[in-house]
Amino acid sequence: MEAVVSFFSPIYILMLAAILGYEIIGKVPVILHTPLMSGTNFVHGIVLVGAMVALGQAVTPLEQAIGFLAVLLGAGNAVGGYFVTERMLEMFKSSKGQEK
Amino acid sequence: MGYLIETVYFLTAVVFIVGLKRMSHPTTARSGIVWAGYGMVLATLFSFAHPQIQAGPGNYVLMVIAIAIGGVIAWWGAKKVEMTAMPQMIAIYNGMGGGAAAAIAAVELLKDHGGGGPETHVLIMAVAGALIGAVAFSGSVIAFGKLQELKFFKDDAKFRFTGQQKFNAAVFGTAVVLGLVIALTHSSNGALISVFFLLALAFGAMMALPIGGADMPVVISLFNAFTGLAVALEGFVLGNSAMIIAGIIVGSSGTLLTLMMAKAMNRSVSNVLFSNWAALASGEAQAVTGSLKAMEPPDAAIQMAYASKVIIVPGYGMAVAQAQHKIWEMCKLLIERDVVVKFAIHPVAGRMPGHMNVLLAEAGVPYDLIFDMDEINEEFSTADVALVIGANDVVNPAARTDKSSPIYGMPILNVDYAKNVQVIKRGKGVGFAGIENALFFADNTRMVYGDAQKVTAGLIQGIKDLG
Image 1 (tube, rainbow over the protein chains, first blue to last red):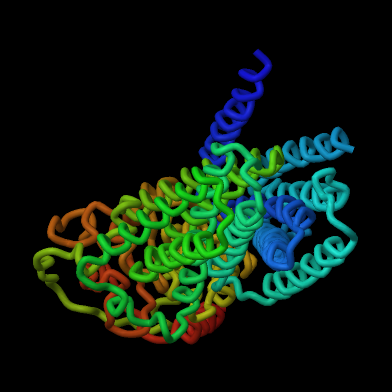
Image 2 (cartoon, rainbow over the protein chains, first blue to last red; image 1 turned 180 degrees about the horizontal axis):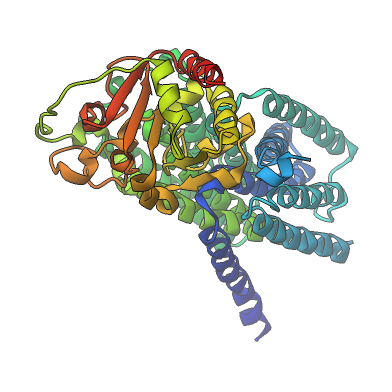
């Protein structure tokens, strides 16, 4: 029974996460499409933590080199994704906000 | 330690979800990305203590160096980029994520399993993630090159040849077969794995090369979803729940976003990937009758200053001319004269949906003056003046009436219903789709020729002269 549960729990995660992603985007106004695409782009920058683990396990120089590349690219994704998204969203102001 | 890491990853996933939710409304959007940013920092810091990391201190040094180099370059690029160049910047960061996922898979596959190692289904996921990630990487790099208008990519036609789709399918098929061989035989053969990655990278590049610049946003969005999926698959391989959840959310939301963009452009995703405008335009479009009637900026200014409602329709041409600041300056003068000013945004104005909103926001236009096509299309009939600046195909009435037109059926802004239409245009050329615009020849349309910035300066002067 335990084996069955541990086989199915990732599938449940997958299904729920997929529905969640669909729901979040479904209600977004068109004006935020570009920043939101950029925001989701930032979110998959979490690949950085996987890259760190991969590099941490690397033994041979070749594995280390590829792991190094993975961390470098992952960090670029996370950092770049954050700052472009933040720059775009910072500019959205309503006419009330502007008078301040 | 394992419990602590899992708790941190769980919190990260929660913060990502809340952040994305907040990003879906303009008033909370900025705080959304900040929330998600905290989650990322937290997850990264704690990952240094991940129990799966067994190797010596040398690898930690490499980690810190790699994060520093990647982070600083990306930070510098993100601060410097012009708002008009945002789409290609998103593409390149997305490509980096795909590349990272593929590289993780490479490390896992190259490890000497000694006959044992991970189970076959885990290796299949590693290979699938590697394939998707590599395609997203090379495809995004090409997309960046094309949108940046690098010389090499200028001519789409030179990348098209007969039998191209069959050739691409063959490359893809070979990569899939090699991937299955690697996974099923638990092979860690370097040569085999290298060929597999080269084929995957080649396929991504060949997929993106023939696609024209106008369709690129859809493709970038698709690659974004790809990267999400690749990250999730590698998350399964590493048993990393944060990667699984974040990756799947991006995969599904990215897919939906891609479909929405394609729909707004009246194209299907397969249409974007496997064909092009030139092949679509069948038959002669109906001849346009009437004549072009020019107008000088001072006269246009008077018409707007004495109007009660003006709707402005900006297009990418305005952003290229950097006229958005001047336009907003003009609008403020009109608002002072109690003219109602609204901006109408077509879903594909700019280079991707929402891009024009970003460009207007940069100029200081408040978002409550900016309206989507569906919100404002009814209002054109009550507008005294519709000012079209740098837009063309998205206001072409032929999309409503002319069945032989390549843009027939595309939803357009009903600019021609306004009492007066002013079109600011550099010259008499045609739009992206390469077709004449019947709007420009209509009886209620006046053409104001010239550089968008100079014309707008003329309009501002004209309004000021009225006192």
